[in-house]
Length: 99
Image 1 (cartoon, helix red, strand yellow):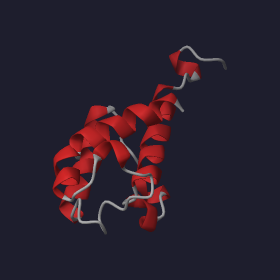
Image 2 (cartoon, one colour):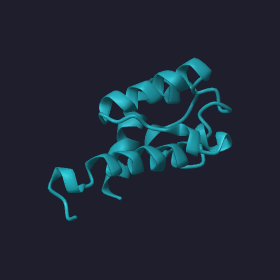
Image 3 (cartoon, one colour):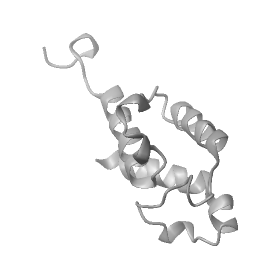
């Protein structure tokens, strides 16, 4: 998905300060980084991050479909946001798509 790189880059840019404060290099962070357990974000910070990606990508991400254990992990978070963004821009019959 081409959007995954865009979503990941946006998140890492947004989290640059907290990642560096936690001793992590944003360019070397793995998909398995748990943002909550590592102390990069607290629960309020996670809610702010969700609001940020909703605004940035003009989507309303439904995180109820995500396993709560994965919601705070970078890779699954990125993939879920990217998938929601792809669904939003996919052609539909009422927007000129096939049908």
